[in-house]
Image (cartoon, rainbow, N blue to C red; front, side, top):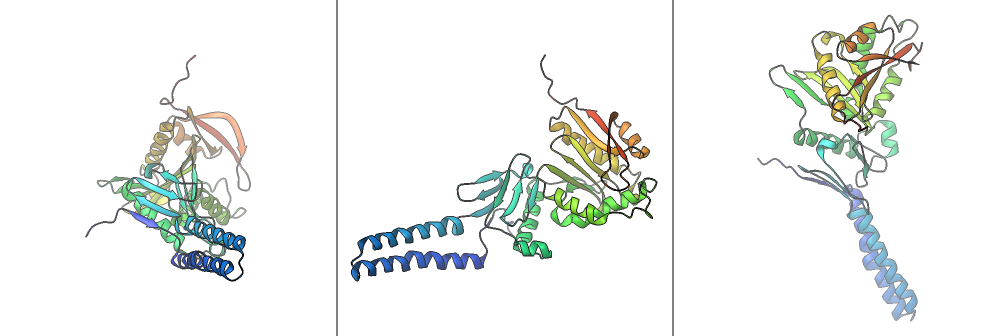
Length: 320
């Protein structure tokens, strides 16, 4: 059985039917009215106007209803919108998400919306799965086929991209890691874990084209996550307690650091809680160093966090 490697999506069948009815009505009905206006009322100007109106309606229906499409192939994704086409390579694609104005596709440099696939505001608000969500899932599978995740069959380790369906998984990994390592900073009796706020943050990050999310799996089970952005910042590193001290954090940090260095930032940075001495020691042992910069943490009781940096030896040097 042949594997289909090219997929084309257009507007939904219901919308397509409505557009075709509109186009046929405009292309046939309006010209008939023009003929009647010419023959019965002897009004050439009205007839010409109706012909032009019908032609304009047909062109409008074709351009905005029949012409838009989304094409996925081994070479990447092609977004065909009226006057705004875009091509994105699989290895540059950083976000695939449903949107009210079209399926959101982006890289660190561009953002595009495929008009032919939309998710209504009502469906998004109610959390209802739609055709747009199914297309997102299929595109994510195609991306993994054409730009595969990092896999090691010997150890059973896979480092894959975070997907829209991973929202609850990402929240749970971060919560498990935080509650195990930060009880001395966030007293659970006084400051319960802010699950809703953290979940909303992950929802935003999953739709941010400049954010890279990776999940480490061991034999198919989630064992850690790492997040970085296009500005040289390591934003998150978390390993649940049952997978701690097994090298997963080191592997994720190495993976993200190499990606950040490849991006060309002269200096990499991260923020870590000042009283999280274990994490600070972990980063120091891997080449990161403290700075004098401090700030308040996002969540109560807003403990102090410190900025750490790592020089990128691969960054291009500026000439004197």
